Each structure stands twice: as C-alpha cells, then as structure tokens.
Length: 294
Ligand code: G1P
Image (cartoon, rainbow, N blue to C red; front, side):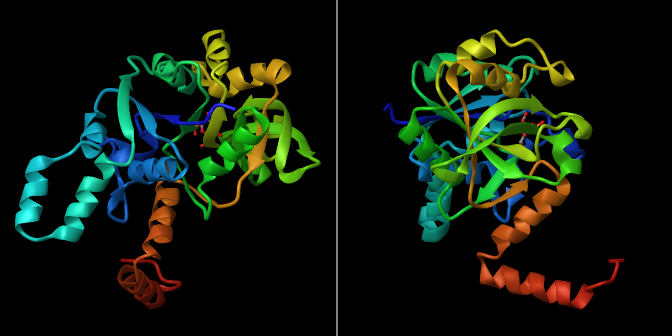
C-alpha cells in the first residue's frame, strides 16, 4: 500500500464570513492564541506523517507562504538578543514539511482547487486539509484517516454528527456502520449542503480527507454544482459506485475557525494549554458571568 506522504491545503477562499478582518489579511493567518491557524493545520499534517504540503493560494495570500519560509534577518536578531525560545518558534514553521504553492486563478470551487494540485500529487494517495476546520485530538485527525486508508486501500473522509438543523451547512454522507469498527461508515450517498428536509443523514463531512489519486479523474468530469462551483463532494459521490468510500467518525473536537464564534471558541480551547493565559480568562469570565459587557 502506497504511503500517504503528500497533502493539499486549499487556502484561496476570500473569508467573507470574517469581514472586515479578512479585507487585507488572509483568514488562514488569523491567530489561534499566538500561531496563525494554518500553522495548526500544518502541525497536524506533520504529526500525521505528511512530508510535502501543497497550498492552493489566490490573490492576497502570499503572506501565508512567508510564514512558512525562513526569515534570516529576524532569526539573526533573536539569536543576538539571546531569545532562544522565540527563535525556535520562528524557525519551526519553515522546517515542518516541504511546501509548494499553486495559484487557483479563478474561484471555481473546492473541487477545482484540489484539481489545481494534480501535477504535484501525481499518482499517489494524498490528504486534504480544509484550513477552516481545526481539530484538537489525541491522535491527529488526519492520522486517524490515514490509518484507515493504509489498512483498507479505500478513500476516506472525516465525519461528525451534527444537529439536523445544521446539515445544510455541510456535505452530508449516508451509509451503514462497518461491522469491524463502529467509527467506520460505508458511505452509500453524499450530497453537498442539502436543504435540511433533504439531508440523507446527520453525518457531516469535516475538512479532512485521504484520497486515492483516481479522484482527479472524477474531479475533471465534475460539473459545477451547489453555488455554481465544482464541488469535491460531487466528485466523491460519483466515485462511490465504482471505487467505494469510507467515512470515519473521528475522535476529537472540531472548531470552525472560518466563523467568528467557532474561531473564538478555538482560541479558548488552545488557550487552555497556557496556564497563565487561561487563569486570566477564567478570572475575566468569573467577573462577568451573566453580564453583558459594556
Ligand atoms: C466544505 C465542503 C463541505 C464540508 C465543509 C466542512 O464546505 O464543501 O462538504 O462539509 O467544508 O467544513 P465549506 O464550509 O468550505 O463551504
């Protein structure tokens, strides 16, 4: 079984849910505590065994690439000042994975963004990380999926149960739980952002996928769907019949960092790791519990 070594991170979206913050700043660079959110994604990729990451960018996204580049001048300044801990933090993003970028020239959808990486992926399985979805898990979410792929040879998407009224915000997958593992779902149908009454289940696709390279053939034949965009969900739905597809009800907590509330909750979640910051938040919340801030 081919190892999953490469990943695609589509980061060309305009971040309209976060305006005006994202008018001049890529949403992927908004910080979770003190790290750009996309760094958490690349950390998850590296911790999952990914060696090469292809970031799909667009206009106004070049600073993402700068963040993962070396910065000799800053490094030298920190070294001279003896700020070793900060220096390590500054150097780390440039050493986690090999990185390449591809520009998606037109906003034709998630499926199209993935297709832009075809020539760099070649004929090997790969992971996809949607950078809005941050997952805090003991075993990295992508690693959970890679383990399924490497054991079965079948493409797999991350799933989580959502309240029925939220199904219209996600790709929804229907299927039967596999007898070998209660987290594994044999997907039989998929639909992108259905009307709530049409949702075939309450199992939502979360932004982690491990895909066989044959998905590129399906993507190249996929017509624009919801929102007049080429949807990854539609390509995967076409793949089910001929190739099969698993869903995996991953273990971990997912935050939608592309949404203001989800982003703030993600900040609280990761702030808990720094006792000094968390103590200040607890103090603030205790002092303001039940009250509306002025
Ligand atoms: C994308 C996918 C959708 C998935 C979601 C998860 O939608 O198209 O199937 O459920 O990510 O976050 P987006 O939220 O980018 O519109």
